[in-house]
Image (cartoon, rainbow over all chains, first blue to last red; front, side):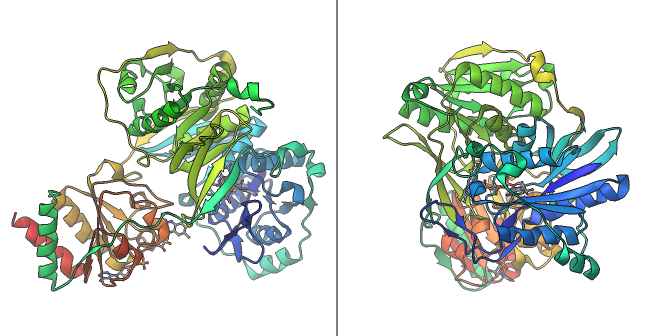
Length: 262
Length: 338
Ligand SMILES: Cc1cc2nc3c(=O)[nH]c(=O)nc-3n(C[C@H](O)[C@H](O)[C@H](O)COP(=O)(O)OP(=O)(O)OC[C@H]3O[C@@H](n4cnc5c(N)ncnc54)[C@H](O)[C@@H]3O)c2cc1C
Ligand SMILES: Cc1cc2nc3c(=O)[nH]c(=O)nc-3n(C[C@H](O)[C@H](O)[C@H](O)COP(=O)(O)OP(=O)(O)OC[C@H]3O[C@@H](n4cnc5c(N)ncnc54)[C@H](O)[C@@H]3O)c2cc1C
């Protein structure tokens, strides 16, 4: 089996700043981490390989610094890592990001399964996984909480829904996006960590994956962030209740009755 | 599609809503989206269309007119029971190509967030996720889409000026449905599933409804929500009793969920549920922005915290300063007297 895990580097803190020109996030100088959901994607890929054989390849699109999360993926057990990095990729929205990742997956070739995290904690859209599947014309299952079975070129998964879950089966090649429920990621050994530090990680440019430059980066993105602002200010001044617990409770119940809430 | 000229732009009209079904039952978020679509359509002097895809759903679509729809496209087919992403995306993309809507709105549910990005790629359109605000630019008629990003720390306004239709997902309980008008009527169009939609699809083997994985906080009128200040699972036991007393549901902050005191399905906030209840009682929740984005549009917010200066205590309509373990039992006492 050949598995590709898509991983994203995201800002670790909330201090992120936005470039006034491009309205995109300035990533330089920020502490960055591996998107938390993607740790589960990596772990699931590695577990499937451990059970069924094959190889797991991690790919990430981002600035050169994103090589750090690929090293982390190597330390967590993936066999190979590839970075997509070029100024032409910069400013991609989810349409363009999923196009570039799909082109890289085609270039890798003979991939059976692509695993993504449920969503990235910065952009928060959860759109890249299904986007990759659509660009490739593959089947997809999102919000996967468990891989039930893999056999004869098909995968059976448990998908979360608002009122429970369902179990569905798909033929390879397929894309899945995973929830935190799916596994408990391992802690990398020191030995693996050291090896990951030394690993050679190829960097692919648009030409390497045969990407149409009209479909990547800011130019290839149908959406434009035109404005960013702080969240709206909070509405009012609270009515404060203080005193003994009994006094507080009495005052509250009185307030609620006056407002016909109870 | 990419627009290349002004005439291209005029080819697209009407605001579409993709109806949300769970187990072939129409979900309330659909009416909320129709309400939002109505306002946009009025500004564009166009119509609201709803696309309803499911199995045995034809009888349910009448209510959509009462809530503001003008036309409903019904695709009623037993193969559309359960959520087959690939099939629904192909059907929808085909309908979009046939009727050329200007705007398409989806629910930001498990289904909508899987369906919409697939359709956006097939139809070559921009898609904005989890919008909390939708408006029309009076100058050029573009859809202005506002959404929180970075865990609610910034609000971004997004547009897709050069592509049509413009697509957005909206979380349940963010928009409000209009008052239904039982006298409103509209037109139903029937469309079918075609063989070409069925080429590469998954098979749904089984569906399980469980109370453990989902707690539909949105159905409650009152939510009693606990945070790290509840100290442990016993604290949530107290909140359960409190909730039972007032007929409410129990919510939680992520800190409480991460500590394992209560399952994830109760989490309110950016990475949990968005709620818009009549009353929200926050017990020992400091009110970090990621929590606030999930509950700040509740009608009446009560906070109980030892610390009077937390963001939650500022946001609340009533802020009670004190220890939750002393105050909650007293409140339950007071309520018993009624
Ligand atoms: C404020 C703001 C708002 C935005 N809103 C939108 C919007 O509404 N619509 C839109 O189309 N774009 C939007 N974008 C752009 C979007 O953030 C980027 O396209 C981003 O590259 C991917 O989207 P995401 O972070 O939401 O990822 P998600 O779709 O949430 O990521 C899901 C999974 O896809 C994989 N993945 C995502 N990105 C990468 C990557 N670069 N490399 C490898 N794997 C990856 C990971 O497995 C990840 O867990 C916005 C950007 C900003 C700054
Ligand atoms: C990407 C991202 C997504 C997130 N998504 C969410 C989300 O969806 N939902 C969410 O809730 N959080 C989310 N968070 C986490 C969020 O930032 C906060 O860490 C979390 O909400 C804090 O939970 P809390 O208020 O319960 O804990 P704390 O901030 O520790 O607050 C506990 C409060 O309890 C009070 N207290 C303690 N003891 C008592 C007592 N005996 N009586 C009365 N008061 C007492 C304290 O004074 C304090 O104000 C997210 C974070 C990130 C980075």
